[in-house]
Length: 402
Ligand SMILES: *Cc1c(COP(=O)(O)O)cnc(C)c1O
Image (tube, rainbow, N blue to C red):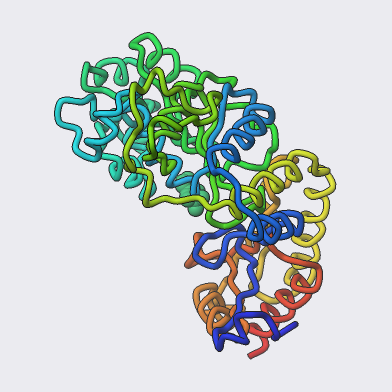
């Protein structure tokens, strides 16, 4: 294993990432073409609004949406999306946020869609109105949330409906969009980690979403601090007006008209709620190259590569006493195949929790997935090289021999 990364140089242990695109250990491995673009971007100047307009065209092209906008991550995309739904093209409202007094400041959301990331919606000033129950888990056959419950919660104070796209979320996005649109309310979708499959770039827009937030630093493998919104042009314009630093001499203020409409705004917006979520020219250039490359990639070949890595580790662990392995999503070609390693501590002599803890204390640290503790840990192949796969395999085996 190479122990000469920049992090060792800095006196900090590096990590071998066997748990997928997790922000807290650095997300993903940025594409070489994106690094090259960032290097070149660093050496010259550009008007950020022009570069955002270029990114908007690309995002529109790959998602089928009217427009797009690059943010400093999917969470920032949610905050900016909420701000756009609340303020629209009203520059007075933009200047007022996060104070929503007198503005439609509520975002309706199913209880079962709530996550820690919805703090980003509240950061723009929104108040979240929960609907539905957690009934599904009672086993009565009832649904967690019904479309009419969304309809009942929508009032003149509603800015948007927020939806978290996960394989288990209900009702369908189509059904929620139908209800929201009947009441002239936009739907904002958190799809941060819903790639692969690449078809999801278009799927939520096709289902009727008005804004969709994706992470640029997960499967797309762009710069870590990027994400993007895809959606309706009017909402994207509001995002741009609240994010770009545009407070300039009005007489010479000519923003790209595909992104910002000075007529509709009626003046130059001041630094908005999005200003603390800056996106630099380097991130923009890197993101554009990464999204291009992600779109063009051979996604089936990627799946085969990931599956082969998961199978390699499964093959060696299967012979260990007290260990059972299975590959999740083995029947699917769209989701990265993840290995679940179930450990029966009695016969293995060590528990899954002890293994995960010990691996994280090594140098380099080895991170496997801890979501299925205490029975099992997981190995996600997305962020591993072949060499690292061999290393992770060895290090896991070594825990049982210790
Ligand atoms: C990762 C993630 C985010 C945050 O994405 P960033 O690009 O890191 O800001 C938000 N929501 C969900 C569901 C996520 O998985």
